[in-house]
Length: 236
Image (tube, one colour):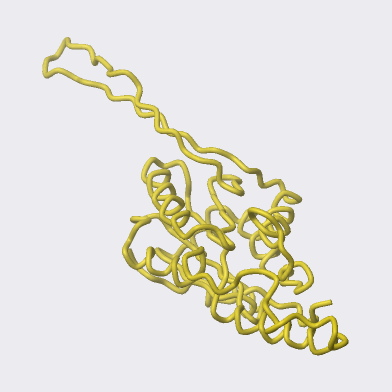
């Protein structure tokens, strides 16, 4: 595993995207995707350049996945990305030593994958916003096996810088509460969504796994929302 920073090249990732998110990359993932999947990479860049966190949806309860992943997935869907399952099937051929021998085969070995949030032209992308952090083990291990089998060129995970966004959320929520009549304010200004839990998917959890090399040689790009991803609007 080699940590790289090809995303710092403005010809690969323009400042409109680079300055709004935090990045972690292995094996020159950004440069590889731009080179071998230019259309899909341009779509990723477009979304990272334009999508911004809106406090009024970000800080609102949203069921199993929350509003942010749904919003991001919707942007990819507009561009033809699809939720898809990648299964692998391996066939083993046995060749006996001898001029006239014919190879025999073992029964195919089927390896069932899982549904990635977004797939297009050999790039897989999952939005892991606040799920159980074990999802990262599953994602990176799957990316590794798919890449080693030649099924994908690279993998992307979009997540969040938990600590940075926790501080921003407290600031926004406090300002919102202070703007309410005293009788309507919540005790201790408790956030409407749980941003304090440390066992959910986030940049620090992804970095731990990347540094352990869970993804092998598969080029990986981790993209994390931070304070700069905020659209600058208050919670209303």
